[in-house]
Length: 352
Image (cartoon, rainbow, N blue to C red; front, top):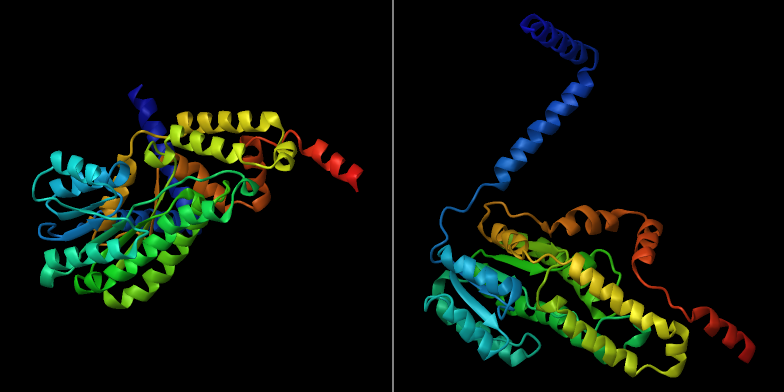
């Protein structure tokens, strides 16, 4: 048995030598890939030497990603200033941390509220400036088929997710330049692959573009910009009760013509798909997202983009690179089809 194993090892070694001699280009390529991967891993794991005394401002800390990130950075020794939309959210966050964590009430759609936050942070940080800005505040609803929506529905989402993010970033830039800081913007896989009507996909696509142009502008000042692209997670944004309530609002105000075009069963099917996707796709482990945010703030060389969640890394983001026809077919399988569209077309033809 020992002899057999020895002969087997010698045979394997001979084959390896033969492969090396006969296919030097292949072996060279494999060696280069392994070498580059090891170098990238080492570089990716290098951390900044010290976190204490570094100020980080986070928006959207009432719950979800922002809330967890504020707690984790606070434990790591960062000087955290957490922005909450409500006093209740602010009080609850302070209750589970300590007096060292500061909070402010911030509405990112209100210019005066943003100005007050900037003034507060400037006084807190002094000559150090701001090390980190995490733009996490956001909302998803109203979301639904495009012809169910009006301009106000689009503005509700865009004003928070994109316009508010841009205004917060621009007003904090002087403090970030002073601190040679970092900006972490929360986008979404839906910013790379649009499959829902309304302002959400538009806003997240805008966050992607804004962050790219911002990163290239700010590299001259030592300010780094990273983008987080989460998949589906259980947070306030994906709260099924809120989504369904708003979908009922949209459906109930539709004109008879639009309802007829979709059919009575479409709305029920749409709700079923929403429930199925939220219950099966949404991960409850939101630390997968905050880990990415943390890395962007603590790594010596932060990444430009972070795909957060297995669904993002292995389905949504790869699908966004696929030909449009492939993505269209996949989404067509997943999403409900209007049941009344044939009747509607026939009716229009008769009317003509």
